[in-house]
Amino acid sequence: MAKITPKGMRDFLPEDMILRESVIETIKGVYRKYGFVPIETPALEYLDTLKAKSGEEIKKEIFVIEGGEFGLRFDLTVPLARVAANNAFTKPFKRYCISRVWRHEEPQKGRFREFWQCDVDVVGSESTRADAEVIKCTIEAIEKLGFNKPKILLNNRKIMNGLAQKLNVKEKVDDLLRILDKIDKIGEDQVKKHLKQHFDDQTIKKVFELLKTTGTNEQKLKSAKVLSEEGAKELEEIIELLPDAEIVIDLSLVRGLGYYTGPVFEAKLGDEIGSVAGGGRYDTLLAMYGQSDYATGMSIGLERILFLLNKKKAETQKTLTQVFVACVKPEFYNEAEKIASELRKQGIATETDLNQRNLRKQLEYVNSMGIPYSIVIGQKEVETKKAKLRNMKTGEEKEIKLVEKIIL
Image 1 (cartoon, helix red, strand yellow):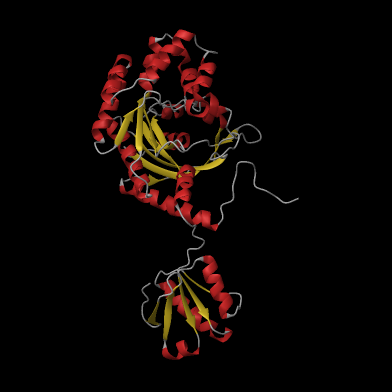
Image 2 (cartoon, helix red, strand yellow):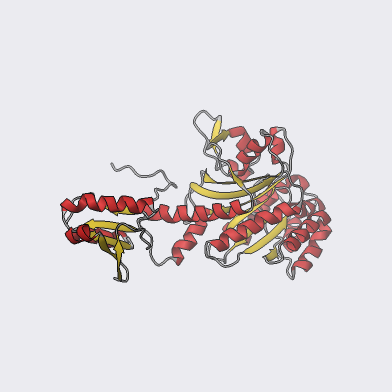
């Protein structure tokens, strides 16, 4: 029986990995521009730690390691809190991490059990400047990947807490937010059905009156101030700090993870795939490790970005090789390899024929792989120290001296 990958897991073939690594490097480049530094954490965390701040839905999705002491991390934020609480970093500590996470949920289109997140976080700043910076950084990364400016949806956990207090259901606020977070997945009717298991009809009606608040950002903030003046003020500050961003106050935005304490935000690139990034402020998460501090962050979902990029691309890239040095006959292979070595010294990714094929078969390989340039070495090229650099797409050729630096 042929072995297959575990359910919800994937192998990434070269054309997948070339694009994936290119996207990751682009995002890293933007994060570094803002002064964020990389860290990496283990795939495993103590199960009690993961459950403490996961929320009821995520608790069910944690991959539990046999024995029950450990689980696979479901995001990159809980591990960051542990690292930040146990190290004396100069504050603010600005980190990024691009890595795998796991959730034991039923796989479906666009959703996997193993996936990658691209996180950027600030620990040790109470100011909304930190929230604005992670949003701004995320916007720039998305634009750098070739997309239009994303729409930023903005809300505040404090406003939702204020609503729960006003409706006298403060002790059930986690249930409220957990269920409301499903609205994009299961729709309003199903959400109301789930809410009826915990709340009366009048409470549900009041909740949806707030969620469906329409009008300008100013009008929505006016409604929000009634519930939490502090929460509304924080949103106003973030908007002021991001004058070039397209920001929409969305009082229906609820991020279900239990550790959010203040502003929450998402980035959208249209209605086709939902949000491509999300995050928020989680000021109490470090306290779980006995070291209370302020923290905020945002995460780009790599899989969703790649889904959209693959739809835009007309063709996939199969190789990173830029030049193939072919030889007319086997006796010219050593000369071809010398030329390839010189090209590699110049930083040009270069291949030669390893299978002792004839020239026609070598050039068929070049075309099959989509290698953009070729050089053919025979007796004449060896004697004159000159050759033709051929653009395999256009057929254009230019003469080059094999002893000089080659410019593609």
